[in-house]
Image (cartoon, rainbow, N blue to C red; front, side, top):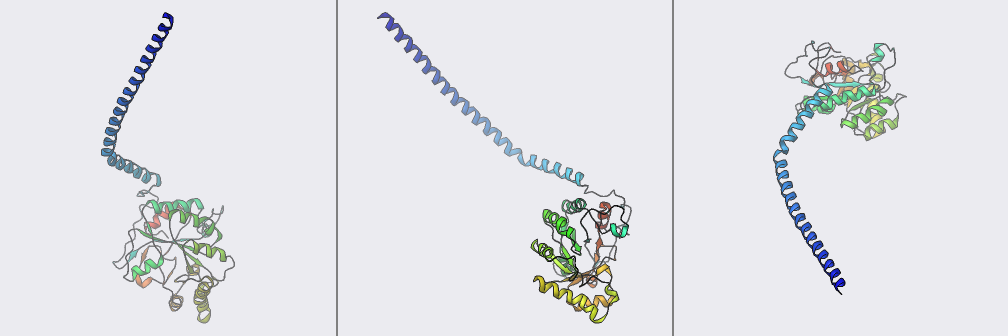
Amino acid sequence: MFKEMRIAQIVGLSLALLTSFMIGVLIWSGVYTAIRRAVNASASNELENTAPLDASASTEVQDESEIEAYNLVRQRHPFENLPVHSYAEDTIVVPVLMYHKVETPPSGAKPSVWQLYVSPTEFDHQMEYLYMAGYSVVTLEDITTALGGGTALPVKPVAITFDDLYQSQVDNALPVLAKYGFKATFFVCANCPHVKGENVKAVLAAGHTIGSHSYSHGDLTELRGAALRHEVAESRHVLESRYGITTSFFAYPGCNYDPTVEQAVINAGYLGAVTCVTPFNGQTDSGRYHLARRLIDNDYDKFIARLEDREGMW
């Protein structure tokens, strides 16, 4: 009997100790939770008070690193000593960039061939510079509208154009343009064998503009009368009827034009035309049918100098 009572006392004591322990755990758990909440609330308030400053500092450092990484400050480059072109008050300064083949330049090519190439990597680099340096990509119609006294162009405007619609433009340029959200004008020869209908449709589907590059890409200064009208006007008619578009701008093949050719373009109803015989970026309303355009190749420093409108940088 005594033994049984002893066991009952031990069990009772054990239960009491266990109960006390559990109560202690619950109490300390509550205290711990309260302390954690207080600490978290204090930390949260402190974070809220300091967050804008930290975010600003982070952005500032990022901006500085971007400027350094992309070399946006280009005061020091091989053409820095060339003066920037100056203009009369009625001139709007906007570079119109001209590209041809977006593929690696052939090894050992002579300058007349090499200048028609820009590698896919370099093209991306150049578009990246436009994006990071704050250029606003505008259309040719934006330019002629501004020249006529309409809507003004944004700060640091630039236009992008391509001639001939080579396959490499579709394969290598379109993805890069999409990457940066840029739109361009592609000048197409209406009757050139290398121009594929699916490529024209790909350009249009991506939101870009098609312009006329004549009917058969000949030297228009050697033509007169009906032959000249066919090259200028029929090319527009073919492109518009074939693709259901409006073709408002013309690019002179080989950049060759004279007053007679220019008048034929005017008579055909185009809003404007581009050439590439003027080494500067100034545009005037009287020159809307020979807008200045800069030939861009695989040389990054020349690309920068042409954007900056450095004298002598054809």
